[in-house]
Picture 1: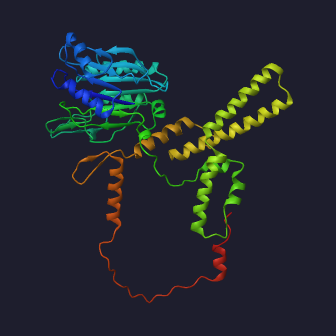
Picture 2 (picture 1 turned 90 degrees about the horizontal axis):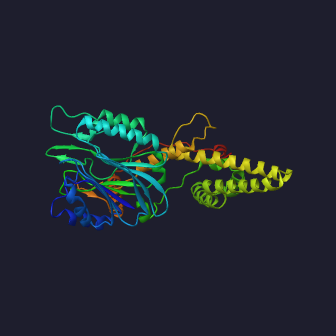
Picture 3 (picture 1 turned 180 degrees about the vertical axis):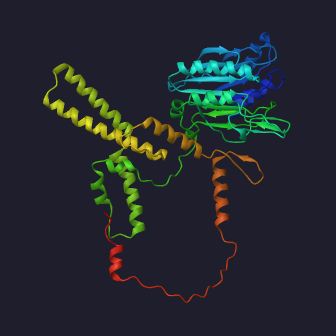
Length: 430
């Protein structure tokens, strides 16, 4: 699903409905939120109905400021309005797959005193929300000093109330690709528009991405959120990596003895061993989540039998065996996510898998390349073109300019390695 949030700074232009319909078609939008509508209460409904979406919820502007319109397609199973406020609309979104999460569309007031009321209300919501939560919109403030650029001698600092709220409630910036600043007026620029989420939302949508689109009539860039962009792209060819949790499997030692050939040439041996490990991982080790669910179902089945016929020695022994196997799987799962997160943990038995999972998702998102600038300073979003540009850059970087290399006269001689040391180098690895 694709969501777009945009501070359009008015909806009264004659070309506005056609522009929104074109954006909907071009970006295949399932949901759009329009901020700062500047439309009278009487004209809001008729104007919103021209935008091409069958479902809508509107918050009218107060005078000449504010206004939030949320419109969506039937492709979203349901959207329920939980709370309305002149600075935000709080929604519960249920997708076609049945997954439910909270979405808060924000249009923060330009005045600092009014924004404090917004942070108080969002703090109240934060204490009530237990599941995945995403906030997006125009926050009219920055979190970092580098998110604002201006020729003025005394530039505005970061919004400390905003920064404190993000830190207190452990919210994470979803990130973005494309131009850095989302607002521009004259020679002043700032990143006023963004999306924030908690770790549960990031875990639900690990492949979500946010794009800063071009300016359309407004001095704010639209934010395009794609929840499942990776589903439309081919999976990357990842290099082989040794999974540390393999060594905890009781069959791994025997697998290594059978799959490592000491007499084979080193490069060829490591290549075939890596292929054997990948095959063993799929066929024997398998996905830890699936193994965990299977073992828990077996425990549930034993529990039902015990509740009817009592705990016999046979079922007690089987239950202990499954418990031990489940304990091993949980330990392996913890180690896998710790390795993916590149995190240091001091106590080997501390299995805070949720922390490692969130850390790995944030790391994966930070390393993803969604757009890149070409030689003409233009943003390129196409994956195949990005691969071609990166390959060409490093090919040029690592290719020698001269085809003829001068001969170096070197009369040095190097001692030969004797047979005993050669045998020592070729000894079997333990």
